[in-house]
Image (cartoon, rainbow, N blue to C red; front, top):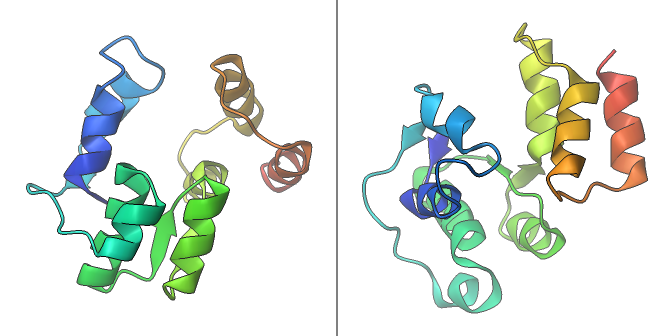
Length: 130
C-alpha cells in the first residue's frame, strides 16, 4: 500500500502515544513515499494536505483506488476518476484476506478515540465482517 510522506507526517503528528500510530509504524508492508508530492492547485485549494497528497499520488502513479474517509476528499477523488474506500473498507478487506481483524473491536476502538462513524457504516461493517 502506497502512503504519501504527507500522510505519514499527519499520522506521526499525534505523537507515539496517539491512536493507531504504533500500528502504522509497525506496518512494514506500507510503501511510504520519500518525497513530498507536487499538488495540482485544485487539490491544494480544496482539501487538506493528506487527502490532496493521496489523490495526487494515485493520479501520478496510476493507482486506481484510494483510501479516504472524509466526504469532500472522497468526492474529489471520484471526480478525479479514482475509486474510493475508507478505513472500514480496508479493515473488511484485511479480514477477507485472512488477517486477524475483529471488526466489532476495531469499530469500538475507533469510536472510543473520537473517530466518527455513521450508524449505516457500522451496521454495514458488522454485517460484512461476520
